[in-house]
Image (cartoon, rainbow, N blue to C red; front, side):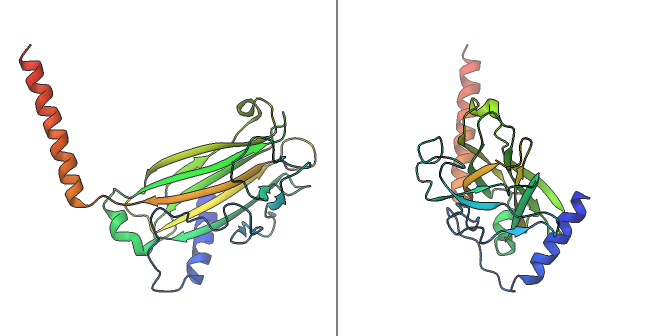
Length: 229
């Protein structure tokens, strides 16, 4: 079921992507409106039955500006849709123009975000990043969250999470999916803000040569050290 959903969402997105896509920039956040400052712009509901999460102002009903969260939090954050046990949205990043760099197996990424919830309630948010091939098949997944009450010391707020790694060599698209799950009461108090996905520059061949040479020298020195004992 998961695979079918992924492929149908990817097929829909691919049909709307113009040919001649530009290569994605390095060291730039590639999640559109990851900080909720533009409402829910850039995010699409999973289907007709699943409501999109909300963009809300920091304040009494959610997270106070004085409570734990990003220092540069701005005015808005994401929260689950009230009255629904589950709300979610997604967006798809086309990386087909970065295929040559990705195929080297050295294309790195950094995934960061602030996730949280309300006091001791188990409502939570989770950001899933699926790396997809040209057919929409899922190659691997990176994940942030959930941040549960025990992780927050039962405090209301948002807490920093980070993950990094390398893109699978066949990656042509990346799907970002933000989930909000309600476990208590009527409000869906899964919270998120400042979501970011950044591609890190691929080292030049000369840099790799120097790295390998350096590793070789370290290994040689270690062998000589053992032999001298």
